[in-house]
Every structure is written in C-alpha cells, then in structure tokens.
View 1 (cartoon, protein in one colour):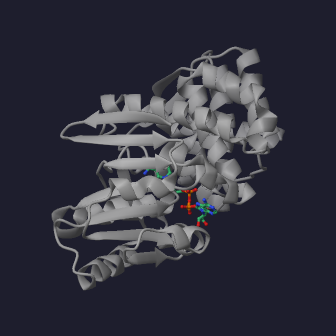
View 2: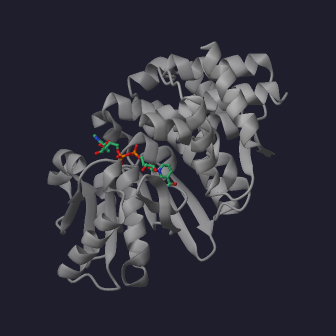
Length: 345
Ligand SMILES: NC(=O)c1ccc[n+]([C@@H]2O[C@H](COP(=O)([O-])OP(=O)(O)OC[C@H]3O[C@@H](n4cnc5c(N)ncnc54)[C@H](O)[C@@H]3O)[C@@H](O)[C@H]2O)c1
C-alpha cells in the first residue's frame, strides 16, 4: 500500500493506493456517516458496506445535476445528519463529484472521504479536491474545491469494471504520463499485456505514479491558477468531441490528445518519433475512435469550452514525452488544425 499526502491551504488529504477498501471502516467516525454511491456499485459491493444509511443515485453522468444534490441533501436531513456528519462516497468519478459537492455545501460543509472504484477516478477524478455538477449540457458548471480527508484506491475493485470504462480510465493515465512522467509512459508501453489483464501488481504501481504526479501539481496550484492547467492536455478538442459524439470521457480525451500531439509536433515542441510513440500507444489500447465534426460545429464547440476560460484559449502542448507547456492559441488555429486532420483521415 502506498500513502500519498496532499497538503493544500488549510486541508490535508491522504490517498491510499492498494489499500483494501473494506478497511475504510477504520477511517470513519463512529456516528453520522452516510454512504453516497450509485446503483451499479451498490449491487456489486453493497453487501460489504459498513452498516450506515446508503443513498444510491442512478449510474452515469445524468446524475451529475443540482436536482440530485437537492434530493440527497433532503435525505441527509431525513437521516438527522448534522454538521458533525460524514459523507463516504463509494464509486467512480460521478459519485465522487456529487458526494464532494454535497459535502462542501451541506450545512456549509461537512467532512467526507472517498472509496474510488473506477480507474478514471483512481488516476484522476478523486485526487485534487475538485467537484461539481453539470448545468444543462454544460459540464461541471457548478462546483467547488473540497479535499476529501482520504481516498482509498483499491485496484481489486477494477476487476468488475466494464471494459469500456477501464479503457476510458487508461486514457487519463496515458495523459498523466505524457504531460509529466516519462517513466510512467515507458511502463505503460512495456506492460500492455499485464495492463489489459488488469494485473494487480502493475495497476498499483501505475495508479500510485499517477496520483503522485497529480498530487504534486495540485499541492502547488490547488485552484487552477497556473500549473494545474497542464492537466487539461487533450481536453480542448476532447470536450468538443465528447459533446458532439457523446462518447466516454477518456475516449474523447484520447482523440483530443492525438490532435494536441500533432499540434505540438507542428509547433516544434516534439520530435516525429515522440509524436508517433504517443499516437501509437493510444491506438494500441483501442482508444482512437473516428470523429467527424462538421465545420460549423467544431468552431462552436471550441468556443463553448472557451466560455469558461475567458478571452484566450490556453492550449496544452506536450514538450517531448513527460513535459507540458501551455500557450495561448486562437480559435482559428484550432479549427484549422481540426479540419486538416479530419480531411486527411
Ligand atoms: N473532479 C475531478 O477532478 C474530475 C476529473 C476527471 C473526471 N471527473 C469526472 O468523473 C466522471 C467520470 O468518472 P467515471 O468514468 O468514473 O464515471 P462513473 O462514476 O459514471 O463510472 C463509470 C461507470 O462505471 C461503474 N462503476 C464504477 N466503479 C465500478 C466498479 N468497481 N465495478 C463495476 N462498475 C463500476 C459506474 O456505475 C458507472 O456506470 C465525469 O463526470 C468527469 O467529469 C472529475
């Protein structure tokens, strides 16, 4: 088991990678605990949950909305949860985002911790303290920063994860490697078979490396004022693809990384060999799906993402494998690259 600490202004969070999730009981207060989970996770793991009230939402992105938060808050009240209460999330990125947001606003904030059960949430979503819900079709428009007291990443839970969800998480793992950890990239490259077999030993190493990297970035820049922006590698095009095609997050980000890698090569940030290595690795895991966004839409979709960041689009380039750099680019440059790529494929 590896313990990784995140120290940010006023809070401290422990990420326990390779820990048995059932030992969560030792980390909980004696009273006032409520579990937030989804129906799939409850069906698979509910019989081993601690004996506390369980609130289960419908699985998937459609539960990330204010109505669900309102309903859960009413259930907390009905269960007499007061300011000393504790929310334990058991689930993937959706459950952690909902539970973290709920904990950050219920009675102006109560304690929380996560058992992170999907690969995407173990390598990315549950580290960093960001939470949130969607507003209409707009992702993560309402949210907050709140560090959970602990996150348990038990890789044995990944055995029950559907294949597409597992691959989607792998995309975020590859993202981490490309922007910050060349050794992690080499490890993924060398261990294709073990990764596809969900070998526990290698998964613990990979998740721990990814969490370590994200923790170091978040500790330096909790509120995404600078360095943390590199975590958005592949996300500018990725969000556009996700909104247009409604594919799983990781697959859309993988296609976004392919485009960002090509752009990085055109700008002279990486060699042709590194460009090929990144794209080949994404392809080998079956992450690169075809997308064909029409001219009038790609511009709108990119502009949509821009709404959140103001005037400029800060684009994340890879500077060789293991390093990233953020530079301002124009919407025209991004749409032009997309069209050239699309028409060639
Ligand atoms: N807060 C952040 O910093 C951050 C970062 C990245 C992504 N996210 C968010 O994370 C969400 C995506 O996360 P996700 O991919 O984990 O989605 P998810 O929580 O919907 O989980 C994916 C699916 O896997 C199921 N599942 C989860 N664990 C399982 C297990 N052990 N066995 C079997 N099935 C299991 C779920 O029921 C669901 O159907 C998105 O909403 C995204 O915005 C947040």
